[in-house]
Image (cartoon, rainbow, N blue to C red; front, side, top):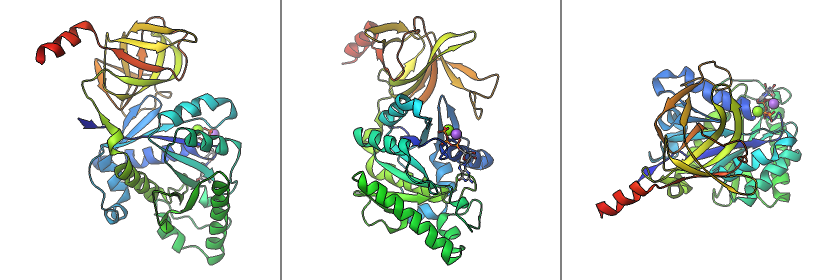
Length: 340
Ligand code: GTP
Ligand code: NA
Ligand code: MG
């Protein structure tokens, strides 16, 4: 039995800072080579626990965090109104979520939609109250913890921030959630933590990562147990045509192992497709899929959690959001029986 990284979806209204936040987390890790690199996945980024602990420094030792999970696996989702279904998939897939709200704009339609998705799937989440650097009079201290930065602000700026936070608390209350600034929480089980951050300056990212890690270790380890030799289970994020590969599916594998030639089942609009994995493609290390030319690396197998592109025959009509399951072939079943 192995524990995989929790899948953490980043949700929120358009332009509230989801991608910038993940870029900051990625950037700070890439810069910190000694702490170990990140793993790039299709549509996702995995940060090893050692790196997260390094980013969090003292803050994490205060929380007495154990070493059970291997890292944090972040999925970005688009905030645009047209992408409801992709947000739903991100929400359904997530073990944990970050709801990003621009602290200066407050709740917007896609913020509320995202909360309803999280509610529907009972996904635990934290709120990142982003763009604190844009609060009038805010003096930025790049890379600092929120706690340190906050202490350096003028009293009127501190009041302004707290006022804006209470507006968020009020909005969450209307939707049925109790919430509080993370450092004033009395019960993590019943209150949502709000962490003030700036995805641009990195202020508060320490506490955000620490909260995620704490919640994951405290509440999720059981659901993160995977079966390394079991047939893969996953979810299709996107169906895409790629030059030289034909139709492909971008998938998050959250349990088991996926191998080349595996027989898989997927959902079409009104029926089930059975096909065989022709190739499994991983993004090259430290490179963003969409930016680089040598984007993929072929691999024979991958173990969850992983974000991979899969090429296979007849993928044209696969629906985004489809589950993916590997069918155990007869040989495997025979071997299993022989072992017993
Ligand atoms: P969609 O994917 O389109 O929904 O947007 P998003 O939520 O990913 O927002 P994105 O990261 O693209 O940021 C939108 C804009 O806000 C960009 O111009 C960012 O530079 C800016 N931005 C994001 N976070 C911050 C922040 O903390 N402070 C400031 N000043 N600007 C920010
Ligand atoms: Na944007
Ligand atoms: Mg974005």
